[in-house]
Length: 209
Image 1 (cartoon, helix red, strand yellow):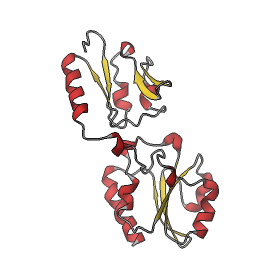
Image 2 (cartoon, helix red, strand yellow):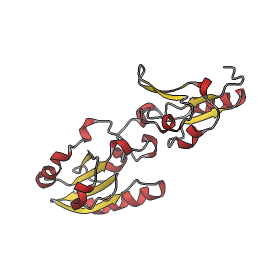
Image 3 (cartoon, rainbow, N blue to C red):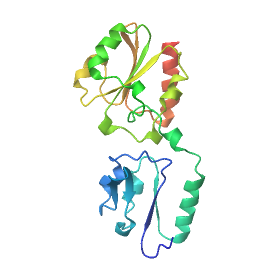
Image 4 (cartoon, rainbow, N blue to C red):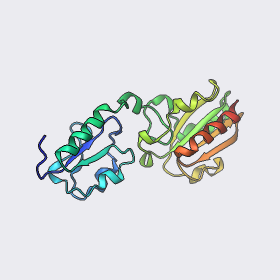
């Protein structure tokens, strides 16, 4: 590819969760980034790129880079080609991220019933689909589950307002609560940052073992 005077934006599709709510689309001043409805994917028109790099700054996943010349283009392309991340690893259910598999979903109308009726501990996540984080920055649910007893049931509840959840001690989304014998015994409010991950897992192991 010869860049000439045209900037070249490269998207690492191994790390981009390819959502139509992509921040790059909303932050691009020239609309170079757009949602390709026909192919259901995030796309970019390099002819419209002005090298403002808003896309690079706004992309939570770090999946977008702008090449200013041929050398940079080749370097970025090689980096993406050699990235060990895979689509299969990326697209799995994660805390605070959009739902991938229906097996984890729980409608809010069923919340009270499952809390009262469940004969095993529950790990309930409350999240807002409109505010969900990029997949790459979220902890996989499988990673959480392998640290706690097999008998625990994990469910994700999509909510639009948190006011109705005040009785569950939830003041932000995403949030995570542990329910045992109908009682809330632990809660975590907010996203889990890298340096907080071990703390969360240790807390869950302590409460559920």
